[in-house]
Image 1: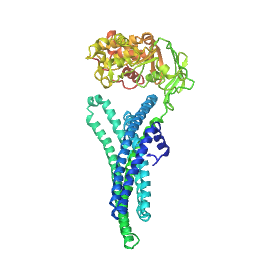
Image 2: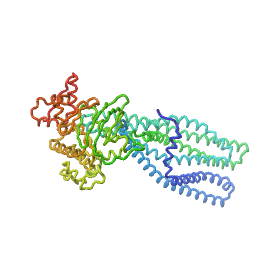
Image 3: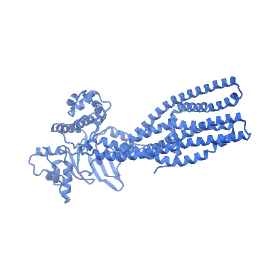
Length: 624
């Protein structure tokens, strides 16, 4: 679907971005009109010079006319300077406003949008699409208006010079109009295809760069290069087609200029030979019309070039407004209350969640977590562990039932007042470009340097941070790739401590780390959860054994609940997992060591398959 050829509502919406800058835009418009007037007066002055002064031998009058001609040229230069100055100001402001609006809106969109969106395509809309739209608004729109005014001046001038020759000149216009209508239909599709394919290039490039370690680790460079070549080739073909369309219409305009000039010369010659036109006046008229025909088609040529920009901008605007028109699914009610300091009690009341209608991922969940209690979710991949924690922070809304924090339905409170009292530590902690201190302080922008250092000390990160080149001022690279996995995890814990949340959600990392870092992480987990309501998506059995309650999940349901000892005594699924994996191990230390490798989810999956009667999966290899 390539949309309509011209969408007035879309154009009006685009032009609104100029409204806050109407003063400078008005100056630029007046300067552009002045430039057009000065430019199109020049051929008229030349015609007058030939007709009224040169043919009459009046050099005195010619001198003053040429002084006026130079003055007109200087006026055109001054008008163009003012236009460039005003539009530079407007252009920068429009670009700033559009990108800020896009950024703010993207930050407000719900998690479901990012589940489906490709980062590269979104980035393309914020960068290249916005750039093209800004160029149209700050130069294209006013240029089109000035060109239309210029056409009006040319029409008036040639009619004043000789209305009969003017009609001859206008005879080529129907041909031009038909050509432009046919051309524009192809151009619309071609330029939108360029935008679509370049977004695909950006998306693929972003994905491969973010996953470069996996690409190199699996030796997929050649295959990824072939895939990128295919996508890049589609963009090349689309760009070539658009370029050929643009290139085809400009020479046609030149042909029409030649045809119009030839017609004027032929008709003027016939009138002179027939005695209907004075030779001197005829010569002046032919000269003036030759100049004006060039000026007449200059705006037409500009309009063709602006049309290509217009089509690129329309394609970009449709994609920009597609994002801006995406409504956040999670919004505060008009009467939403601000949640004051909470204790941390969380209740799931008959909760069902479906990301896709008719396909629930959570079924009839009833759960009461006391303030200060620590619970761990365990289960196979896809059991619903992450979905449970996402509902607490209201990243999604429940399909049925309710999630309550301290008795408040999370849909009835201001979401910001809820999330400000929550902390999240992801399985792959995200750190921003900036210093170590800035990343820790991200949890609480008002935290002092002493509080930042105290948080690092609590999680055991202070010592190695001070050994960095610039200590807490050490600048991290993108995604903190200059730190180890364990160091990134410890900084994420420190960030959570600085935030001092009442509810903590911890998606425990599965990455293998050395024993010393493992011990530091386990100690950090214990410290960061102390005194808080904590929900842990657990992958290490050593972590699970230290929590107050274990919730065993399967197919979107809580199938078992209790402590490690209680669940073992009950002889259910958790006990089956334990016996299946570690029945032959007598030493509890061996159990903890194997558990620290983060294999719980895989072991649980193995247990589930064997219970269902399937072929057992191979046991995980033990660490050397």
